[in-house]
Structures are given as structure tokens and as C-alpha cells.
Length: 343
Image 1 (cartoon, helix red, strand yellow):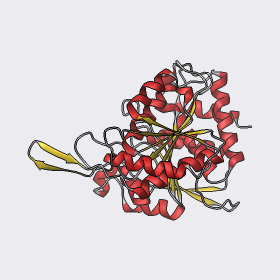
Image 2 (tube, helix red, strand yellow):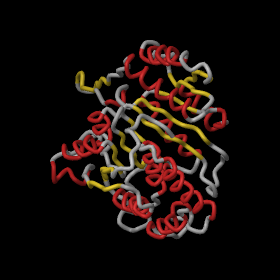
Image 3 (cartoon, one colour):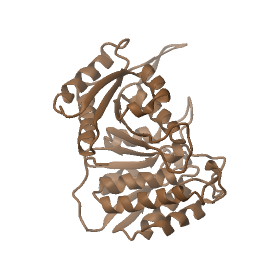
């Protein structure tokens, strides 16, 4: 994976760590153990965010956390909880807005030894991260009537399209598919398509197609191998990225990155799993793979490959599995296996 990132350097780097809620602290600690075993030139700055810190700060996203990530340029984050239909706005959305993390990047690849209905899945979801319905601009018109605003701009649409095509070019990808509903939302999604088409002209070596979002969902469960890089607006991206995770075994096996021009946050995209929090049963794979993405973004490709290979070796051997995948290993035992597999 390549994306906008700071210059590569051998100097010590500081990484902001945001444990989050539920199993977040457990999977983050496990991931940090692997990074420390690799003896990387990192120091860590622990921060707070999520539902569990609201009583302490009066917010789920303290200003100090945002300032830490801005200062360090990179963060590794566990899942944070958000109430449904009430309560404070999402800490995730707040962090993306505050840091202008305009691109959500979700590589979805089959994991060796994890049996699913599909084999050899290798696709990438690129999601615009700053606007659309997902931005939460809504109000009550009159009692019983709520209006939500879908904002699509030329700037954001062009920026995410270029990110997708640059990603495809740098990673040897062959096709970019723009996902839309312009047959109904002719102005908003129409603008998104117009911008993407203009950007596509600058990348003649990469095939370009357009697919309506509901048709995409059907095609993904029938023949996911036909897709490569998918680029889409915010709300579609939130839904489609989870659908794609289901193709390879679930959100516990899929990493995520929120990329900005100079600052990026890498996070597990699964939930907080409060039912198993504190029991030592959490699977840290998603956050470990997110750390692999972080190393790639930091221009440490050899270290990224080393961590990725260790994880895949553990899965290929199949002896150490956490309960979510039918095994009996604890979080610590799985982490130990990954550390032992480091080449």
C-alpha cells in the first residue's frame, strides 16, 4: 500500500495510540507488543477517546488527543463505541473531520487457512470520508419530519478519485470502479461521477467503469473477483466495506486506514465487543493488519512485510486461533505466536 506520507527517515518516530472502548485496549496492547518485538524506532504517546472517557472529559474526543495526532502525524487506534440514535456524535467521525482524513482505505484480502465461500479475494475499498449523508448534517423540520443533507462537492469528489487512481497506479492495480446511485440522485451522485471521469482521463493505463451501488452489492456476492479498486461516496463506502469484509471472514480480519495529506490514523474497523472485553479472548488481527498499513504509510516496507508475513504464517499453520475463528487461543497466546513467527 502507498499513500501520502511523511518522508522516510531512520530517526525515532512518535506514534499516537488511542485504545478506545471494549476490547480496544486489549487488541492495541497486543499490536504494540508485536511492534516492540520488531525493535522499530518508535516511541508511543497514549491518548484517550471513546464512550468510556466521556465522564472524565465531557466529550468522547478530547482536544489533547487531536493535538497529539496532529503533532505526531500518525496514530494507531482501537474501536470506539457510539450510541445508536442518541448521545454524542461519533468520535471516529469527529477525528476524521478534525484532521481532514479524507480517504478511508480498506484492503480486503483472503486470509490463508480461513475458510469462506470465496477464495483469493483481493480488492480495495476507497471511501470519501468527509461529506455526504454520513457527515450527519440533519435537523427536525417539524415534529415527525427530519431532514438530512447530502452534500457532495467537486473538491472532495475529485480528491478521492485521484487518491483511488494514484493508489491503483502505485500498487499495480488494473481497474477502478466508481460506485454511485446517479440514476436516482442525478445531481449529487452525478457530480461525483463527473469528477471521477475527469480524473480517470489522467490514468489511461487503468481501466475505468461505473457501477450502481445496489447492483454492486449483488455482484460482490456473486462474483467478487471481477472487482479491483472500488471508489465511492461516504455512506456507500461504510456499507460496502463491511460487505466486502464478510467475503473474507468478517471485520476481525480486515484493516483500515484514514488518510490525510500529512496525518493518518490506522484503526480496527470492527466493533468494541463489550461481551468479551477484559476476558483475553479478542482477536487482534484487524489492528495488527492496520499496523502493517501504518508501516507502509511510514515508508517502512520491509518492516511491514515482516509483520504481515508473520501474521499470515500463523494463519497458514492453523494451530493458534482465537475463539471467533473456532480456536481456543487467548489474545496473549495469539500475539505470542505472531511474535515467534517474525522472521
